[in-house]
Length: 356
Ligand SMILES: [Zn+2]
Image 1 (cartoon, rainbow, N blue to C red):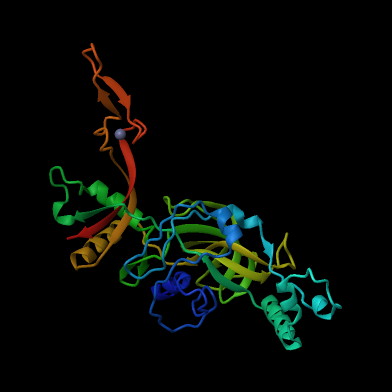
Image 2: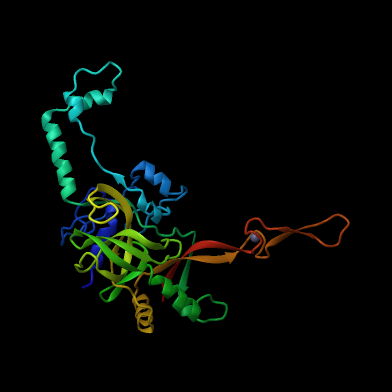
């Protein structure tokens, strides 16, 4: 069974609506369509966030009203640093006799908590242990395009045009990592689309699983994972221990609060932050689909693919060096170009839109 695209979007969008529990990945309530309001990226817990995210990402908004994207690199390896999510116990302070003056204000106020409040805390804790919760931590990364261009099918294979059959095939192959099949059309995926192999470690309910998963890198948007813990939302229910393969769209990094039922953390109630993937129907790279794609563009369908392109360095005119006249010598001195590391070319992210 294939997931409707609306569910895919719902799974990734709660980065803009962190508290909203209605998306499938975060606990499901089917049938409700949501108007998406883009707010700002979620900072998340500070300490681990700092560790896993090299700074310098610029938030970018997509026109569809997608969640804001941060150019941050989620690190798969943070997997192993799971931290316990156990609430501090208040009982001791509450019952303890008068503490010395040096006691902090926060401790005092905690100590003043009423019995009712404490009972509520305990109840919350029990609830947490019973039911796993998944909350968004970091949105899926998409590339921020510095350059824009239009691939016009009317220019295809004309002299000097970049619109060649070969370029079209290359771009279409990349498009299949950024779009998913959605009924008769193709729909933009909330995150990079990749093939995932997995073994199920724990069932979280509602077809959500903790799995050990591997996936290849997807351009600069998603680093590869090898035997990494991941959260998967599958189309069908599977058993713990089952192995399988699926095509998933990256839904970002999520925080999972749960009681683990697999080694080496069996029985521990904790929070782990992992990559999450939502199963989706891929666009196969076939001539039939390429034809379908061209037809959809001809009918006014809007598609664009963001890629990393090598372009000529403007500082050195693609030569890799600049010339400097030398006194008393006929030949200029060649100065290596620092702008492009003497390669004559630069990498730049380019959004290519398609037009008839
Ligand atoms: Zn240069």
